Image 1 (cartoon, rainbow, N blue to C red):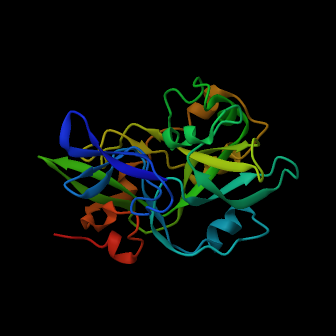
Image 2: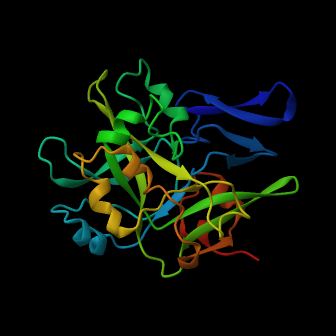
Length: 265
């Protein structure tokens, strides 16, 4: 859990830090800001949606069992996210819910996950926190849109980004299993890359969206050629995507309803 504390060098800026579970106001947000009483997320990618029917994608991925998942309009770090991975024991694909914020198996404390919601495509093969997962434990994080904040003067305007045909897609993800508690904690992170032409005016990063033809390679635990895998981590073509401004209500993760993604003038 987290709470807001005044930054020492700016009395108007509040930073997020651990807090008791009795204070749910900003549950699930890591390394964000509370500016003039409003929560912002400065991490990329830090919020997304998953509301479209998964059945078509489940058939494409060959999933035998599809869990019951409710529509989500404002998914935030520390929450459970739907992921497809190859089960390390059965070697069959499965859809599971993992906590967003990767905790490496060697970590002494799971709080390290607070910093691990994203992995950079440029360094994911080298960073100690991610390199094992990048070689052996990759997953698809299911989504149909994501949010990003564009700085406009002294404020930040949230934008919603999706495919023009509104289809479900998959972020490139990594997963880990931390066994220093019972039950074991399973977590994940999203990989980010540079922006495409659509995202460039909004933010200097974007999540890696994998094309369908890359799913099989990404989910193959026997494929550990990091040069080949790194070549999959490119910005998705902008021509198939759209972005539009949305209400500041998305700033607060407690708001998880369709109005979060509605266009505003």
